[in-house]
Length: 345
Image (cartoon, rainbow, N blue to C red; front, side):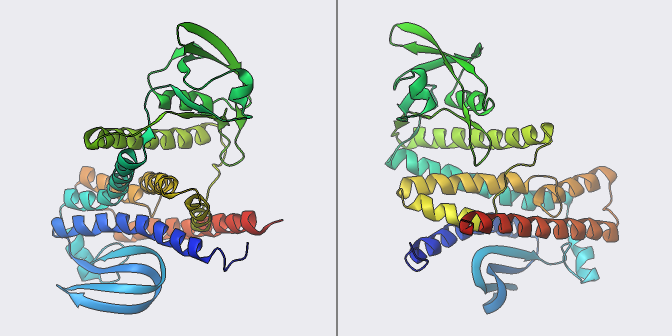
C-alpha cells in the first residue's frame, strides 16, 4: 500500500503519540503551577515556532512538528540566566521533586483511564489465570491446552494471577515448562516450550486471558491493577536485560508511530490498549536514573536534600549535557533501526 493510502493512519498515529507525550508534560506543567514554580513556556510540538501568546506571564506556543510537547521552567538546569537559576534553586526541594515526579505519574494515570474505558466498553483481560483463547496453530494448541483451562502452577510454582502466568512463560523462551492445569474436575500436567518472540525475545505459547466487561468500580480497580502489573513487568524486563548483559530491543518514535498505525487497523480497543502500553512505557523509562530523564533529576534533588545544599551548578550542567548528548545519540541509533526495519527488503 502506498504512503498516501496510509497517510490517515500515520497522522492518527502521530496524534496518539503526541497526546501521550502531552499528558506527561501537562503533569509537569500543572504540578509546577500548583507548587508555585514559575513557568516560562508551555509548548505543543517541537521545532520552529509557529504561534505563541503570553498569558499570566507564561508563553503558550505551537511548534512546527506536531510530535510531543515541553515545559520550560524559569531558572531550571537549561536556563542561561544565573539569577533565575538562583531563584529556582531556592524553591524547596520537595516541591521541585513533586513537579518532576508528576510527569511520569500522569502517564500512569492516563493508562488507568484508558484501561478503565476499555473495561467498561469492550472488556478487559481478567486477572484470573484462566485461558480465554488458545490461538489456532500455536504451541499451546499443539501441547493440548484448551479454552477455559485454569493454570494452577508452572514448574511447580503456584500462580495467583494471569500476570504470574505471563511472567513465567515470558521468562522461558526455548525452554520446556510444565503447566499444571485444572480442566473441569481433573488436573493435568502439560509440557510446552515457549517460542522466542522476534520482537522482544520473550517466551510465547499463544494463549490469551478471558475478556470481560465490568462496571465502573471494577473497571477502575482492574485498570489500576493492570497498570501496576505492567509497570512491574517493564522493570523486570529491564532488570533481566541488565542481568543477562543483553541490550533490550529498543523502539523509537518512528517505530512506535508505525506500530500505532498498524494496531489502529484492528479497532479502537486495540489502539487504546497500545496507547496505555506506550504511556506506561514512557512513565517507566522517564523514572530511570539516566540524565537528562526525570529519574536522574529526582536522584540529583534527593542528593541535594541529603547534603543540605545543591550540587555544583557546573557539575550538574555537565551531567545533564553529557546525558543529553548520549540520549540524542541513542534516539538517532534507534530511529535508524526503526527505519531499517520499515524499509529494508
